[in-house]
Amino acid sequence: MKKYSKVFMSLALSLSLTLVGCSSSNNSAPATQGSSAPAEQAADKPTDKHNLKMSITVGDTSTWYQAGQLFADEVSKNTDGRITVSLFPNEQLSGGDSGKGVELVIKGNTDLSYHSTIIYSIVDERLGVVSAPFLFKDLEEVDKAMNGAGGEAIKNLLREKGVEPLGFGQNGFRQVTNSVREIQGPEDIKGLKIRIPGIKMYVDLWQTMGADPTKMTFSEVFTSLQQKTIDGQENPVDVIHSSKLNEVQQYVTMWNYSYDPLILGMNKKKFDSLHPEDQKVVQEAAAKANEFQIKLAREKEAEQIADLKSKGMQFYEPTAEQLEAFKNSVEPIYSQYESIWTKDLLDAFQAK
Image (cartoon, rainbow, N blue to C red; front, side, top):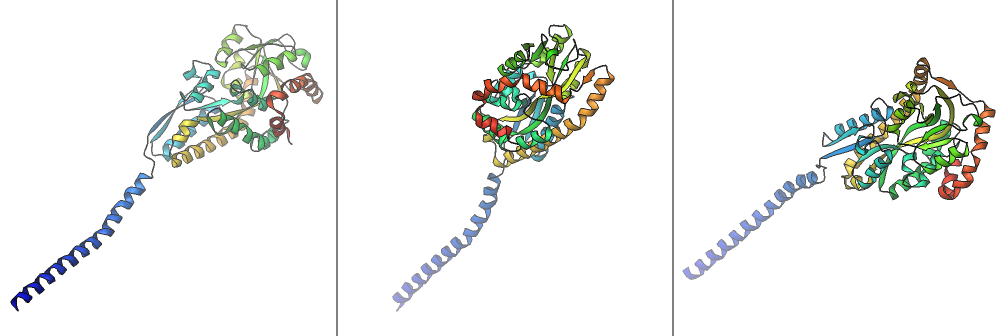
């Protein structure tokens, strides 16, 4: 009897230990799950730090720079300082060469930049379509094209080149200045030495109009005008004003002959490497910066013109007949460049 009692006690003890073991195992499961959830959530949050470099072609008094500063502030604020953006005006990172500045962004040596599509067209001539002569009548047509099929086509071309487009700013309609005579019609352009950005389309365009075009990076323009190496140049009012060209130029013709958008571009590999939340922060900051820059540029133009007039610059606005004469004089450029720009791309911008 004692023998059976011992066996019974042994079985009871074994069963008790087994139950205790099972109970411990079951109780520990929720604790393990509960402790791992916050770790998984934390791992999904961006933690990387980035110190980004942004190049700007013109000086720190320009709307470009002011928008760049807004962009940098927004990115820093919305990443709690993990991502900072340092601004470098006047093409400091490229030794004053805006063409090289674009190449640095494409290669990833510079992270971000504000560059004109004109400068981008050095690496892909198709991007020059936006600045085709007298393509747009006014800013309403510009906005429709840049916010529509034309703008999307440009973005796709940029991605092909390794640049993530973060939207468009505005350099604006390009006007012509010179120190020789008032330009009222095509005949007044003949023989003038005009500085142009370093793209072939502008060389052909100004030669078609009878000028003597000179390719030159913008950082050299003021000195060249001062030394009379060139007679004039063409740029939007914001650049004319912020670069103080009134000190070396007398005449301005407001003919809106070529529109010049800005690209807020980021090296695509760098953008793609960012955490999705950081990508969103960058995109939202860029949208705010571009909207601010366009609004500011358009608001300031009237003030800038008034200031330039007060400093001695003489402004001329061609009549409708004179503008038509200018348009007729540059018509051969469309025939020459349609095969380069492609008909589809040109149609995307000419659709009214």
